[in-house]
Amino acid sequence: MEERVAKLELENKELRTKLKECQKQQQQNIDALKRNGLTPQNRWNSAACHDNLALSELDRLIVQLNGNNYEWRSVLAVEPISKEYFGIFYCEVKMLEKSGYAFIGFATKRMPLDKHVGEHRGTYGYGSYGTFWGHELEGCSRNSGRPYINGKPRFDVGDVVGCGINLATRQIFYTKNGERLDTANLFVSFSVDLFPCVSLRGSNDKIEANFGPDFKYKL
Image (cartoon, rainbow, N blue to C red; front, side):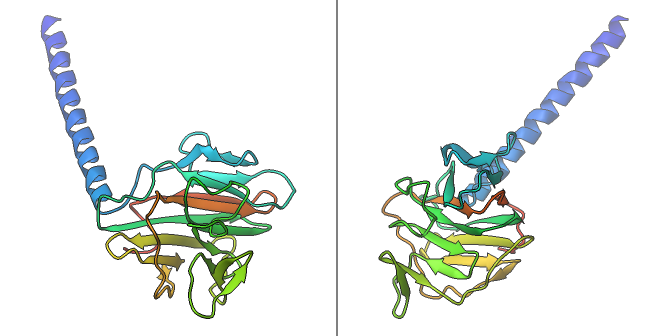
């Protein structure tokens, strides 16, 4: 009996040691990804979320718009884009349901949650109807003083769209279904923290976020 107890205690000790090693390796992997610019443990921020948006309970990666008012509703992520490292920040969303319009991009905490990302000063967004917002270029269009560029690929249900920033050059880029879109001469300002942001405008519109490290677009 004593021999069996001693054996079990030894096995438990070995399991605890292996668990600690696995946890240490996992944390090292996460730290390495953060140094490269990614935020793999990121999620949507319930404290920076419009009341009409519902977040999935467990991982807070799924966002759904409740109501039929067809007004813009936005949510920001918990973690901002790193200013410390010089890799590539990137995240993706998959359009699960869509009856209106959607935006993905980067916003400051100053942006009202009843605006779409890109509509407010200091924010940048890619709209589902084929527009890039927030970049002052020759020939760009304007809405309420905010610049936007037409003629970009639209996205709909089933599409995976992404947004990223080269942290060394500050160039922004967008992707659709694993393909990088043309964003030449589009840059962002880091005067204040920028957060990944999604804006929805349609009854029951729903997206699921992916903060890495496995993306449709290969970094």
